[in-house]
Image 1 (cartoon, rainbow, N blue to C red):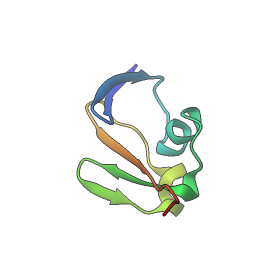
Image 2 (image 1 turned 90 degrees about the vertical axis):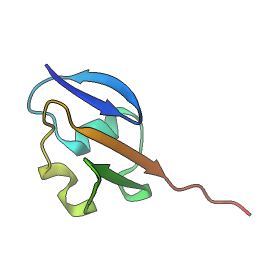
Image 3 (image 1 turned 180 degrees about the horizontal axis):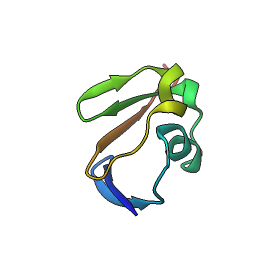
Image 4 (image 1 turned 30 degrees about the vertical axis):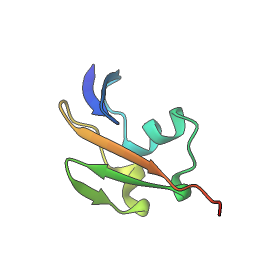
Length: 67
């Protein structure tokens, strides 16, 4: 298992998971969020190639429309 901190809470995922798989498992649309891993923004086109590593700190920021 790979343990990461996701939006401030510890989560465990199967080894080999990517950033995209985490985004989708949380019901989020990749094009509607910004992902930051260990204080660095990950480009949307790299989500499916970005592996999770034990101890990663991930922030998923969802944009909300409104006025």
